[in-house]
Amino acid sequence: MKRKTLTQFLIEQQRDKAALPSEVRLLIEIVARACKAIGHAVGKGALGGVLGSLESENVQGEVQKKLDVLSNEILLEANEWGGHLAAMASEEMETIHLIPNRYPKGEYLLLFDPLDGSSNIDVNVSIGTIFSVLRAPDEAAGREVTEQDFLQAGSKQVAAGYAVYGPQTMLVLTVGSGVHSFTLDRELGSWVLTQSDIQIPADTKEFAINMSNMRHWAPPVKQYVDECLAGKTGPRGKDFNMRWVASMVADVHRILSRGGVFLYPWDAREPGKPGKLRLMYEANPMSMLVEQAGGAATNGTQRILDIQPSALHERVSVILGSKTEVDLATKYHLEAK
Ligand code: AHM
Ligand code: MG
Image (tube, rainbow, N blue to C red; front, side, top):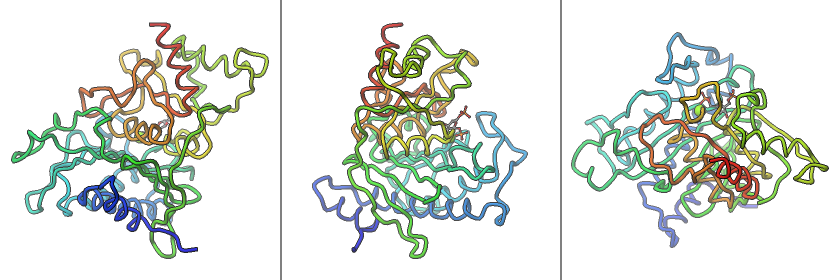
C-alpha cells in the first residue's frame, strides 16, 4: 500500500479549502525535521553521551538535562533561517528568541517545550517535544516582535503538535482541520501518515493523575478521583483503570489513542502557583489537539484555549481528554466556586 508522507499531506492541506498558508507548511516541515534530529539523539542515549544533567538551571529553576539543552538548540537552529518566523519561545529560555538579522523574517511565532518529560530521559521511558504556532499580531508588522506579542489565547493557535519518542517515533499534528499522526520510517527518514482524523471517545474508564499528590488536592479533584476509585458500586457505576507515565506527551498520546482523562491540577504544595504545567507551550497545544479530536480541556473552571495569558511561562491547572469526564470534573470545580 502506498502511504502518504507528511510533505504530501501538507501540500494537500495547502491546496485544500483549509488552505494552509505556505509559510506554515514550511514551518511544520522544519519542526518535523528538528524532531527527527532530537529523536535520533534520544535514541543514541548513553552511546551519544546525551544522558544526565548539566550544572545549569532554566528560568523555572529546574536543573537542565543535557537533552533539554540539546533539543532546544536543535529547534532554534533548524527554525532560524527559513524566513517563516518572527521569533521563538521555549521552556528553556527566559525570554523570546528573535530571528537574527542575517536571515529573512516571517510573520509566525513558534513556541515549544523542546524535551518534555525530563524525569524520564535517563530511565528510557517515552519523552517528547511539544510545539505551538501563533501569528504575530498585525500591529507587530514592520517592527521587532516582543514578548507581549506572544501573549495570545490558545484559540489563536494556527497549528499545534507533538513528537513522541517512544517505541515508535511519532508526530501528532493539527492545523485546525482534525488531528493526524505520522510515524517516522527510520530507514527512509520520512514521516508517514498512519492515522487521520483521530477521535477521542467521549466516555472512558481510564484516568491519569499523579496520585502521590492526593493529600494536597483541592476538594473537587479529590471528589472526582474518589468517585473513579469507588468503582462499580460507587456513584460512577464502573471500574476505572489508572495510568501515569509522567511525560505529558505520552499520557496525552494514550488519550488520543484510546480515550481517557488527564489531570494535573493545582495543589496546596505551592498555593501561589495555578498548577505545574505551562500554559503556552504545554497546555495550549495539547488542548488544541484534544479539542480537534472531539475532547475537551479546562483549567477546572474555564476552557484552556480561552485563557488570556499574562506571562510567557505562565502555569495552569489542566484537565483534558474524554469529554464526559472533563465536563464532570469541571462541574465539580464550578460547584465549589
Ligand atoms: P517538564 O516539562 O519539566 O518535563 O515537566 C512536565 C512534566 C509533564 O510531562 C508531566 O505530565 C509532569 O511533568 C509530571 O510531573 P510529576 O513528576 O509531578 O508527576
Ligand atoms: Mg514540559
